[in-house]
Image (tube, rainbow, N blue to C red; front, side, top):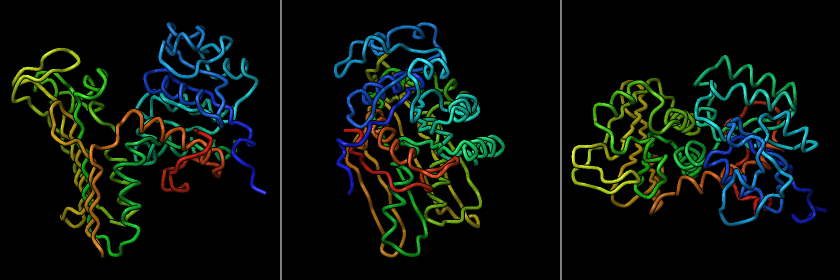
Length: 347
């Protein structure tokens, strides 16, 4: 007989990384009846050693026990907790930078759910590191997944699923438009709000600025829809304010950067068959997520208002935990596992 959700032992979770998203994930785990927060890791000396409740701040919701403290390493967290079932990892966007952290988790025999954007399709970012991580995960018999709302759902898995009732997919166009004015200050900084246009262009050219994961989403869609793309072109530019607009840093004047527009074009034989556009700027009208699929029958999808990036990311990460714990060993993408879905464990 299938056990009722309340009869299932809660999965023991270690939260690795206590930035804004990590702290919110920790709070969400504390509120989930099917998950139990047993440890937290952060290398920041200002957080390590403190009671977790202090590190999480004074937000509403469930509070951790006073005995639960932030550890400076995974080994310390596991020694203090007596063991765990999974690591919820939320530190940085770069696969190369988080590689040692995830390897540490896997060496400890723990599955990993990570918000690292480049881990959504790591073989495309660094095949050598991806093979090493995959080999160790298989040896330790645990699964690793990079996921979230974007990449991991709204600009890749959701359009792929929307095309599942069609034949002969000839092209896909996906668009995500966000009003940066509704997002936190760190997000506005990430998209260049208030910068001089020349500085934003310089940072875009250097890489690691703005949204990370557009290429990963595009390749997931190309694979999931069997589009056989043979060329990828990326183009990004700042969105310039045409009037004074309020921001988290004060007024952004006409001529300053209001945000970014990042695009990716996937081509076959010189013809565009895949296009992804992300607009993240102050004052945009009608935030939304949309996809147009040229197929038989064609599909048009529109999410009015768009998915909110922070809360949707937290939900996507927590909902992935049971699937990753139950997954076959190895380094996975969202295409390898059962479809994303809500979990009773996260309620």
